[in-house]
Image (cartoon, rainbow, N blue to C red):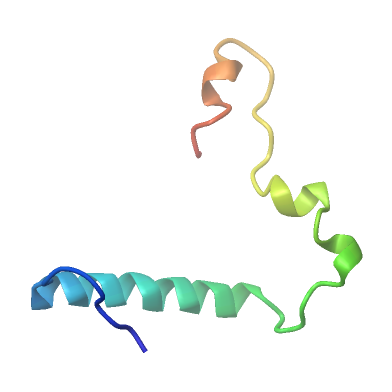
Length: 68
């Protein structure tokens, strides 16, 4: 259930927010196996660094924080 707690959004704004929530839920459902991770895997670096590190070279430092 989604509840507006502040403001007065237009129907278009509500539709956009609902589309984002539904897309996020669909993406999470398709990638997760449904089983929770065991506690020893909560802090594994592979979960934290989901994107590969940029290759070394000119301006590699500038690509560090930009998604590819």
